[in-house]
Amino acid sequence: MLLTQAGHCCTITDFQGPALMNQQDLILLKDWFDDYCAHYSTHVQEDQRNFEVKKDHTYQVCQNALRIGRSLKLNSQDMLIAEAIALCHDVGRFPQYRQYKTFDDGISANHAVLGVKVLQEQGVLRGLPEQEQNLIIRAVTLHNVFTLPDALEQRTRLFVHIVRDADKLDIWRVFIEYYDQGEACRATAVALGLPDTPDYSATVLACLQQGKMAFKSELKTLNDFKLLQLTWLYDLNFTTSLKMVQERRYVDKMAAALPENVEIREAIERARKFVAGKLKTF
Image (cartoon, rainbow, N blue to C red; front, side, top):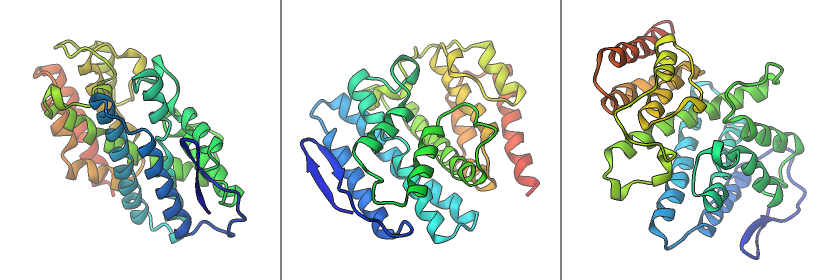
């Protein structure tokens, strides 16, 4: 697999790949990703912070996916695929931000669809066997949907679950850091332009109280976004993901960024007990 430059776009030349994805394929994919990120480098400080947060996020999602994969005892071949999916999952965020100056799919474009377009137009996966290309594309397409299709093939579902968990685990980190940073240091697009007021929506809080995921369409304030992120706990798929939530004290840290009152405290306690209860059963 040979990396070339075509104008400002990095492409991968046609090549008859091996029977299975190998370590060298992954190395070249990582090289492509680094070149791809460099293409979006800018002297505009605000824009660069937003690009950097997505680059760093991608690397952390890769590490999360590998840890989940190891806990599932995936073979070496499947570990390569899991890492490749994690590496590719958010490439659509870069053209999304450049064109729309936001990470909000609802007012711009579906970043998963944009990512698939990048992968296909630049021939990023062309050297891989067709089955693996299709698996990676399918997982990138589905990594951000609210509900997975019922008819999804079992092997594909496994990899989609891995990247979805790995993604959520790092989005919590990104937002906790965002809340802790001073305004001048923040990657502005992280908060989706939502107003940082004391208000929050009863509908989003009810989802957390009832143990179900909230819809992004319900968001009106930054507090709503914090509550929505806590509802993601109910969509995690693996014991290791829940262990990482506990290890990293994500529930406590998110709680510290929310208003202090009885109804929020009770909803958060339900989420905390959910995580502890799930771990107790394994």
